[in-house]
Length: 519
Image (cartoon, rainbow, N blue to C red; front, side):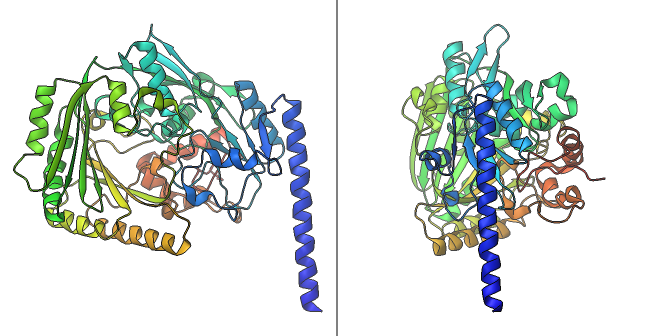
């Protein structure tokens, strides 16, 4: 009898939940249609899976067991975005904002399962309007980095660019919201450093620009992480000058761990100290291939000397050097592994679609040769792993850590991104890969920044901690400090104040969004 009552209670709760979901879906559909928003798909629609999965780059989150949104909405205008936000807020639906789908932990299209949510997919808001008179551009948040690079180069004849990242299918909205480090950052700073204005739709449905949102909120949206503040419709960006021709170099070597360690040991002293125009990064795979990708804005002769200083011909191993001149946008194509400039606008590509887990660190003191040798021995154990070493210094060393929420400036020699990726669904293998990454990360802990450990919010990592939105109302802002200060250091408290001002009801949230203060 007791078992029967338990089963009955379970089936009643399931039926009630289904009825509640149906009611919510019906209400949302009615609200969107009434507001003239028609490009959306609910869970029972034939297009739902395609729209949801199209921009998912980390295949760990293409899983029916993961909580799925009530609907995927793709607004095409500012008014439609505003209307979609208002409909969600009125129905108490959580909002996930997706511009490119590259969130390493799927935060732009998944939830913790405690509340129904809607994905506002911004891919149709991808217009880029360049103003050559003042070297600025208004960029809608759904435009990819590749679309921005293409439009700016096309409109300016290659004389202007925007400092952002290397992956062309990353959404500009998400990248700017987290900072946006890339090939031009040693010369011009982050993407977020070059934002002049923005248009934000807040949790009251208001359309706000820089002056009406206030300087604290405008500060917060430029590097304080995406999904916390409201829906950014568009950004006004400062464009930066680049010469007609830049020089690039790509080198690959296969060699044992010890020579690689010697090479990187030399690199970590040289690369951060180079003039601002130089960007020398390193990618190291488990097969111990070192790839040097360098883009810079000065003569090839000078660059050749610098390259050879680091990579002399006497070292053991196989070497391939590609030293050539091209336009800046062509260098972006080259480093992205694409074939032509038009490929920058192709967001339908499977580029970057893998199962993966990533983590990050910053290095302030050069890692000793013994530590690097141990690291690369460790890396050689897992053939599906890579690490990326991104040089700092230059302009990044001269910008105050509080200019925008991204604080990792003066004193950082380079950043490290660790990634392990696989291509097939295999839960057993997944746990093996992730366990390996955790062990490698622990090994590196003795050599990287600590007290606190630091991380880059655009390489979001839920291992650092999450917010429990389902628990009792308590000091969530205090609890979130454990991971918030790893991303933002001393800027965390100002972010909490900005969140409390712009979204006190916490309508825009995810597992690592900035909580409002409850005090």
